[in-house]
Image (spheres, one colour):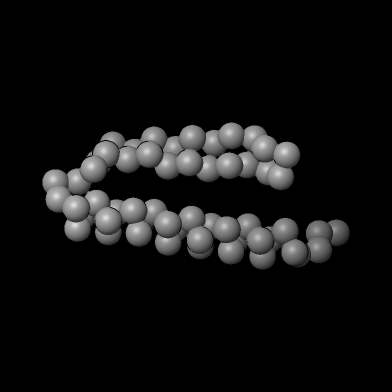
Length: 56
């Protein structure tokens, strides 16, 4: 599956947009979309946790 990840700097940080080709049926396309969203939520949680860590 061809996937393009677009990263854009914003005033608040970085906007991530993921584009991917539709799969051979709607069910698999929806599962792929759900998988991408799940990974982005995990990345967001990880980055949020790291930004709350005090660095000395």
